[in-house]
Image (cartoon, rainbow, N blue to C red; front, side):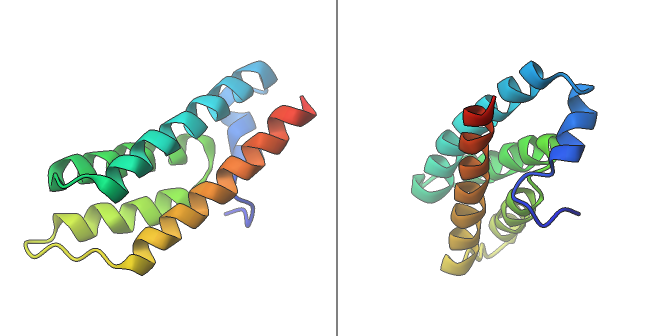
Length: 112
């Protein structure tokens, strides 16, 4: 697993080396981050929050944003408990991982 916010080798394998497709995937992921984080952090609907965490996890796995996927998975499972437990540190970890991934995406787009 890469220590970077986005595993670009994984992304390249997923895209077949198509740099334009990589840019599209990264742009879509950055947009999804914003929408799903808003739901995870702000919705009163537990199911909506779980669904957002699950969807964000899947999108992160697809592009190699391992830290985002891991943090989203912890939130999804925490919300799925009979007595939901969602800590501020889990939310903070997801927000930080997503911010780092979005920063890499921003630099990736600038370099293209």
